[in-house]
Image (tube, rainbow, N blue to C red; front, side, top):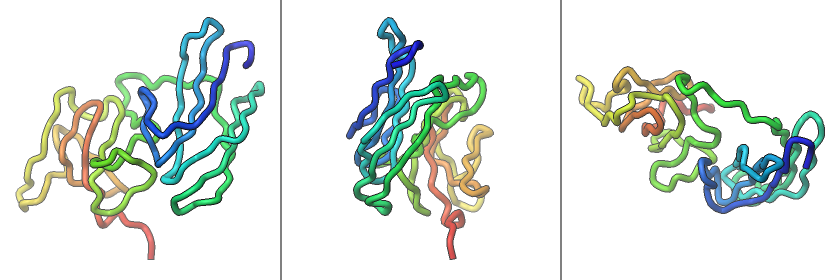
Length: 179
């Protein structure tokens, strides 16, 4: 607690309201004002399961540390700093929400693979009305719908649908990084 409010931190196996789930279990920090009104929530994680072990608040921010179990970075310890105020993104500016690029079937986050169908949540990412897939002249899925594109490592993705708050695409095979 500080002079501006109370910070609550913990772990969740589910996506909290307005958040996206990154892995099998995520950590979160939530701020309440001095009257008990929720100010913001920040859920975060990896493809594994995060467990918070310590929380500290000082004049510069909120520090949380813990461990990761499972997934490719099992046994890793983490320390992260969060700002005390979460800045709002202007409504007209495109913005992908934190941890909100997820597998389209399971809504699990944490990593992407070439050929995977993903769903992306955010704001002002595309048209107000849902626009669904169409085929390009070469018979493949179009990479532009309603003047909206999704890029992975600069490569346009085949689009399944786009809208202002939710879009779905296929991660291009050419976007793979590695030898």
